[in-house]
Amino acid sequence: MRWWFIAGVIGTLLILLGLTMIFPLLVSFYYHDHAWDGFIRSMGISLAAGLILVVLSKKSKGDDYINQKEGMTTVALAWTAIGLFGALPFYFEPEFTNFTDAFFESVSGFTTTGSSVMTNIEAANPSLLFWRSFIQWLGGMGIIVLSIAILPFLGVGGIQLYKAEVPSPVPDKLTPRLSDSAKILWVVYAVLTLFQIIFLLGGGMSLFEAACHAFTTMPTGGFSTKNASIAHYNSAFFDYTIIFFMLLAGINFTLHYQMLKGKTLIFWEDTECRFFLLFTLAMTLLVTWDTYGNFYHTFHEAFRFACFQVVSILTTTGFATADYEKFPGLSQMILFFCMFIGASAGSTGGGMKCSRILVCCKYVYRELFKIIHPRSINQVKINAMVIPNDVLRSIMAFIILYMAVFIISSMLLGSMGLDMMTAFGAVAACIGNIGPGFGTVGPTENFAHLPETAKWLLSFCMLLGRLELYTLIILVVPEFWKK
Image (cartoon, rainbow, N blue to C red):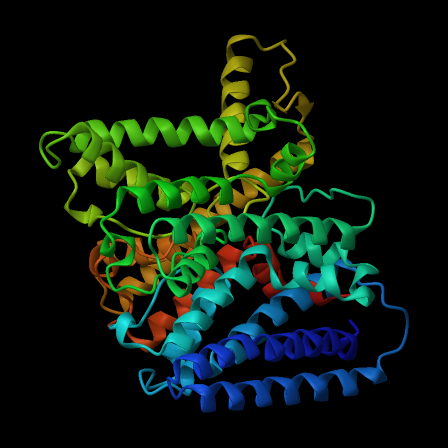
């Protein structure tokens, strides 16, 4: 393991992070919100730490090729470092009284989770709200993917970093050159963000609010500039606009690129995307049926709020336009179930991913079919392609591991004094990178009241969910460190 080389990569990322702080600094100067001092100090610390690591990394010998072990270690340490240094602007703000809360908010931002410890968002400085949204936008497509797109030396062997970070069972490259693929994904990501800003401006949002909400919609992050989230606006236009872009963010970004290349039916032709859209529609109709009459008085009202909540949770965005904890029991169960499904592989969403759920369902069906027809040969296929047995095993192991982490983490939270619903809701929301959960961390509450130990545990769950479990958990396996 070339630790100095890994330190150099992390140092470069910290320099990049420090440079991005110029944007909230400019916002601070524009609004005269007196938060500029915190951003200057945060920028200075990040740049200094990054430069020190880069200089010390010159001791590293060998080429720039990154093997699998180094890739996973780099990604795990890089995301932890980004969370720590990204917390500095929060820590220097009076509202954050300890580093635990600052780190929680930072990790929640970069992992696009959207869980928050801020009790009065609207009272915060505009520059801090901008930073809060901007780090979600950076984390949505991935810090490492961004680096691969703009830093040439990471293009050599960068596939190991790409595989360790990109939330997908089988990461796809759009072009033979990984750096070109990363640039394409970022261009598509930025263009969709720009379009959403334009739509929100057209509906009457200010440029600041439109930018902040677009920065947290496309990465399926969910941070809002309002205490009541999107419910603050009480606008059907904003609801449907954000629903549309949340759905786009929940679809594999390679499909967006292919559609731009002329494949107009690619969304429907792709098996996973078709499953994602049909499942979203089915859950929306179920919640609409359950809430119509006994919660909402008109069908359109029931459909509008049901659709927003289902899409928000299924894409793991976490925006809210209603307190779904007041919904009938069936609707609450559906929304809780959606927290585990997640969006499409290759999207900015979290959760288990629709591709894994689809493969798991087909695998179970195949086993049942073989019981009836023992001599039959029935293979699991996605998009007319046979899923190899090693991928099947990996998917099944991932689902088992995901549920194991959920159960163990929930039990740990229970041991800290949290009630069962809050423990389950908090872990499901954090490991799925959703944001609001159930119980005392529901859509109208926040995570500020939780014990500090619980916040550190949930921060770890956020990182686990964003990096697809294996990248972090494998670091505690003894065999990983053996030569």
